Image 1 (cartoon, one colour):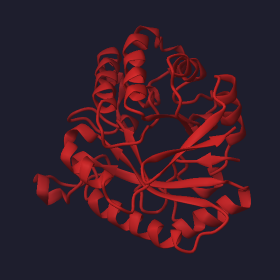
Image 2 (cartoon, helix red, strand yellow):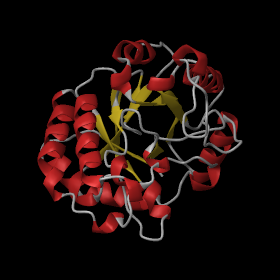
Image 3 (cartoon, helix red, strand yellow):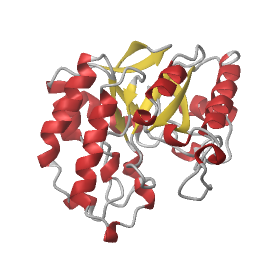
Length: 276
């Protein structure tokens, strides 16, 4: 197994009670070559709730600045004694457009190797996971999602665009949703990533579902390559060690079938190619 560049520990609110050291032990047992620790940092709620005159709830958690500080510090400490595995310090930063200067500050942290850019929610709405889709007009929601993904792709403070089709992840009957009308904006996202030297993530979290999927799917991964995409990462987006290596071999096969001869990881934001 070559890599898993999107993993969460107990520092993430939805992560299992497992430390960075726990992740390292599991990664070595699996024979992973490269692993990144990328705990959640939602930029629109970076400070404690009082800063926003808000109250914390299951749907709206705050103080992700502490998550960033604690996760990166623990990972940087483990890097000092980690052997037999390339361990990367990073974060999954959601809603970057909420505070671009703060995103740039985190990106420039000298301990950080890799930043994933994610869009987990729309303005004034909770994470897509919590939405009641019976009360939502889905098409305008997805329109807005891809527009925000395009704005995010144009930023200069990340390395990898994570799970590009996250906005589709929890909609009812996802497999029946016609994504083809969004191909033009997705192409624009791909061209923006390529022009800016950023990577696309092939996220296999959905392979655990009864009707399995990847974010994005194979058609889009192949399209990214056709447009000139060079940098691709793979991940299980795991929140518990049991899924750290889940079907990574299939993701590697997908990358090969799409035309990639190497995967990419980042060391201090510099891309490193790992032959497939």
